[in-house]
Image 1 (cartoon, one colour):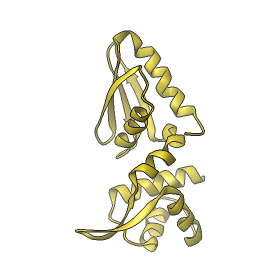
Image 2 (cartoon, one colour):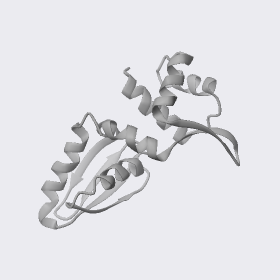
Image 3 (cartoon, rainbow, N blue to C red):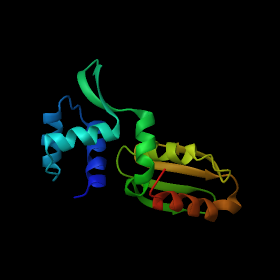
Image 4 (cartoon, helix red, strand yellow):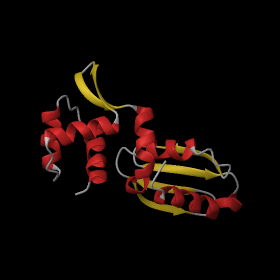
Length: 150
């Protein structure tokens, strides 16, 4: 499995589980099918902007929101599972827990084609600025999925 897939897995794990050490994260990655050394994991965590913070539940790793958006933009295509549309709205299905990050990336582009987004856990509603622009918004979203740089 490649680096991008490993990064997606790391983000999912620390988003959905309380992980407080690199050893715990390494074990969780192994269960998910990723063999990783401590040195590689340390580089991945630095690349992803992951920080260890003290919460009411104790120490845990978290994603820094700005870092996550900037680093996730080139991976948006991996986060989206499906895009459907009707005459007035676009619905994007993402990996679990990734809808808000993907919606933030769409919003951050400030496209005049998009009136707004509403994100849940794995579903995003995208409202086009006009019902006549649904196809253009679909092309815009698909173009984001194919970009290699933010």
